[in-house]
Image (cartoon, one colour):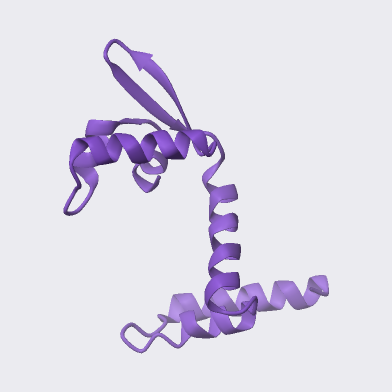
Length: 113
C-alpha cells in the first residue's frame, strides 16, 4: 500500500521493484488481489497489465492503522502509544519535533480536547 500511496498508482511489477527483499511476483499479485477484495485498492486494465490505485485517501488509511496499532499494542491507550513514540532512546526527539508536539498539546488544550 505504501508504494501505491507514494506513487499514486502502480503495477504489480512496479510495486515488487520497490520492496526490499521482494517475494515472488505471484505473491505480490495475490496480495494485491486480497487488498482489492478488501476494498483498499482498485485496478484498471492497461493491455495485459493492471494498474492499481488506492480507494481511500492516505490520511483515512493512516487514522485506521493508528487506531489498530493503539488497540493492539497499547490496550487502547493513546497516551501509552505517544509515550512509546517519544521515549524512543535510539533517536531522541529533535528540537523541531519537541516544538511541534508542544504546539499540538497547546492546540488541544485550547480546544478543550
